[in-house]
Length: 263
Image 1 (cartoon, helix red, strand yellow):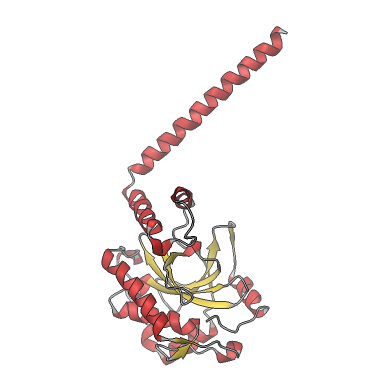
Image 2 (image 1 turned 120 degrees about the vertical axis):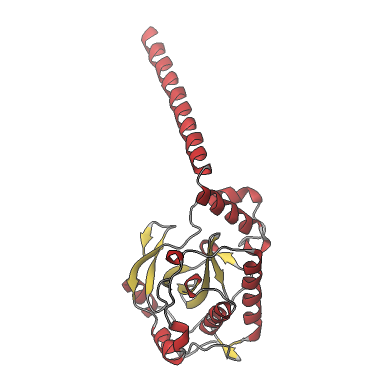
């Protein structure tokens, strides 16, 4: 009888010590991170963006869910292996050569600071372009894809390239506004513009006037322009599932799915 009680007491003591050690490590980790200016700034900016109405993917979500979103560490898109650019993008560059001209990187191509002025520009450009182009679904697939700047009628591709063009015209560096190809829940091809800021990667989408962090969009992220050269594209590391969707896999998926263009 004495031996089992002794063993039980030893187990309880070890459990208590383990909990205290883990708690101490958590506190120490938080203290070290708090001294990291870049980490603190990133968390602060992300919290600001998520608390703004424009950023809530689920408008009914409580503020208690915000810390969980921040802990994911998914504010920034992770570039992976080089991959081919969309065929329509190559044709777009032939037509609009100035849109694909590489620019000299400044400060190693760092992210842009999201000031109040730039935030206002993002919202203004996203909303104005969405309202200035009348949606027209591409029913011809790849053959019918024509990426045009500011057409009267157009699909997602035209919205995305026009937004990128207008932001660059307002002084945004090309490295901070990238085109990205995604797949919707229904498997359709879709193109969006991504603004790379120090508060996170933000999506300008023709399907909504609401600007949101990339990881809150209900898309499968496939490939994106690289900051160093807009002519080069890279596949995107799937941080949510912990795997990489390679360029070849992306092309296979698109080959087996409808490519009518989302409006």
